[in-house]
Length: 409
Ligand code: HEM
Image (cartoon, rainbow, N blue to C red; front, side):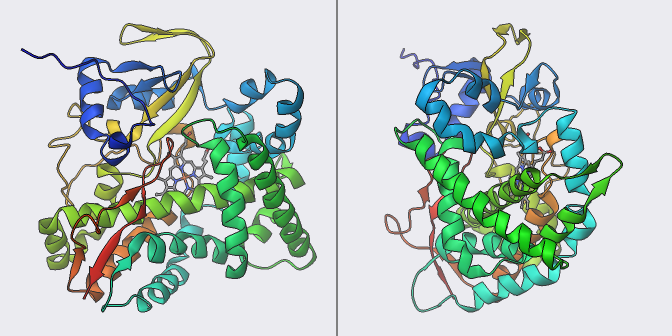
């Protein structure tokens, strides 16, 4: 009899990048509170453990400031300007700072305002789909999934599309620091350059909007106030950076992973064609089945135990939403794609205090884009492999495709 080696989570493994789900299932059964030597962090894979991680006040999302506090010398200097802004991102803060930031930003970023973007989003979707050829292969990831959410955010902030390549390059430099899978040597210097460029850009935009306010989200955030006051200049810059950063790439990967899932399940694609009213539950299922938020990070505030393992103060913890979303303890037939699944309490947008503020917008984009794709094209096929093989990104915090070749007709 052969025995399997103990399951180990190592993000550098390319097979894991393509398909992490068999390992997630083994970890859930054999080592649900797993210590990953590669990550030097705990890996949680069960639904209830990941959900509790996000609810618990023994865990904090504030992992950057303790990390920065122990740096010295050149590294500390290099990261000073990065920390100036990232320490003001609500996603890294605990109450009461989180509460104040979220309340102020929430006056602008609310369901009504985001759902009001349906018209502009539909325009961007049509603009991109109009340009797709039917006589040659299309790379869905590069031609639609990448530009769509970026254009939507730029429209929302009233920033010309021409600024996008520069903003994307700067945002990528920051991402290597915030969500990178491994430490490459110059990532601190690149993060600094990315943060400086983004901050410089948004400082100018904010100055322009102060001088001539409009009906865009930047002007509205400048005007937002509550009984305790307004957002400071640095908080405004930091929040614009956060919205750009949090809002475009995650949605890109939702659009890519959604089509990839449909290509693997032609029966479900046909079901959506036959019953377009399923689009809302289909989007929830794409978010569950292969969502873009792979690992959600926390740091242990006070020592405690989970499933018999002791977590020490200062330990890092990754809750894998993509594992939790396929936990058989929480979902029937978790490995199957069922676009009519209900209920569908996936954890892809997080849970509790930090639940994603952009969820209504991401859902809107995915609904309009997928529904219009299916309406317009009666043939949506993967190219034969190996040419049609999707390319998965190398990131820990996110899961998505950077290349998805398809043929449309
Ligand atoms: C499919 C697309 C998206 C996914 C999967 C996603 C996922 C998430 C997750 C998991 C969190 C919680 C992180 C944590 O608990 O540490 C979060 C927070 C957040 N997201 Fe999203 N997001 C998406 C799209 C967007 C968009 C489009 C925007 C804005 C335009 C946005 C803005 C935010 C903000 C501001 C927060 C911080 C909320 C807080 O800390 O209270 N997200 N998102």
